[in-house]
Image 1: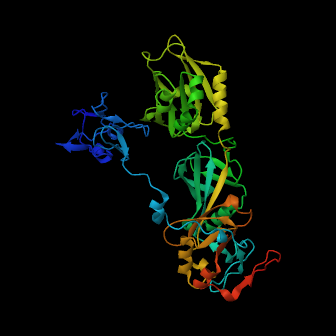
Image 2 (image 1 turned 90 degrees about the vertical axis):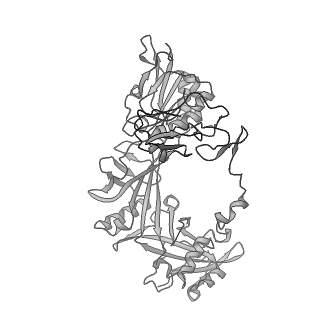
Image 3 (image 1 turned 180 degrees about the vertical axis):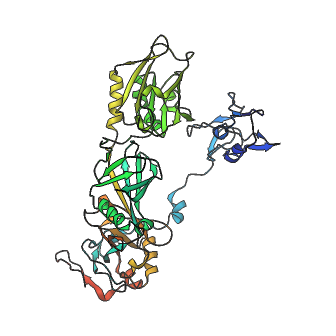
Length: 506
């Protein structure tokens, strides 16, 4: 790495962001020492464009192939990810390979034992513990795996609750942080996208206890019960969501979600794509891929094409996309608009360029003609095969719901006399928390905060009340001996038999 001292402003961004601390300031100018790996992090953050990568590697440096960065690591030094070190002209992994025994104490307890993984009964139709001093409406004892087991159930009113709606699509629905409304009233917000999916947070205690709390509670419950709900995102789309079905976005239903980002799509299908064209561009709002520069493209024999993209480069062949209404969720409406330049010294007449997106649905094949402009041509059989393979590898566009609630407060009162012991048992895995029979994920830390996939809970198992709160069917299942130890309500316990219907206790 070299520094153009005339351009350097001494802003120190490169010092702050260098992963191997190879940059320092001397008299308000950047200086790079021998630890430098040419990872390019300093170039990414330098607004003055005062840093450039040297083309001639240092003697003894080894290029790492563990990721797209391709660090050149000098003898005795480490790579930018701090995983590999050049030891005697060989890259060695710094951290030794760990067995499960090495991490068991950190991982903590195993999953709940098989005997308590399933509740004897569910809380659907059980009724509620109210007031809190009363035992839960149904407490039953039975045997599972020859173990004496207790299940305590209640339909718990939870003000501390909400639902995250996961929408598997590349279609833009709005900007992160935008309010989400039912009608004109706010019920949630658009949150950070996850891989291939848009995420909407509905509810939470602040919205539930706000002026529109009743509508918020009803919206959470409707989504959890797999009912159709219409949501409007400020400065974004109108969306109809129903758990287990495809979304309807601005009146259109997407067929599928992306198989991966643009870079991953190149990596998955490089041999097929390389047979389809001399250059392939995979448009994607996160990482757009350019095959000739990409490590996978080079691996399958792709040659430099002279094609330059308008997007900002992350690493070779991987470009940060943007967000819009175009192909791959980008701003690109006309596919050729992604190309900023064609280098005539590298490109050649007759070269074919395939442009598509991560679902393989929109695609165009273009050929460079005599004046180095691009002419659209019919898709070849090879291109059609590659596109159909990408499309067939995509999963259907789907709406999912992850209900989140907190039972660390009074919802424990009807279960045991010593609520903290119940909390600890849930975190240890000696008491298993389920919702309508479905397994939950219990968040770490204090309290009992859990998440459950509502797609695995029977429809219409959730309710809401004007307190306002949502009502969730909660089951705690544990061994009888553990239930006794935490102060279980033994006087209210009844034997369980699958042949006899149980009625809730008044």
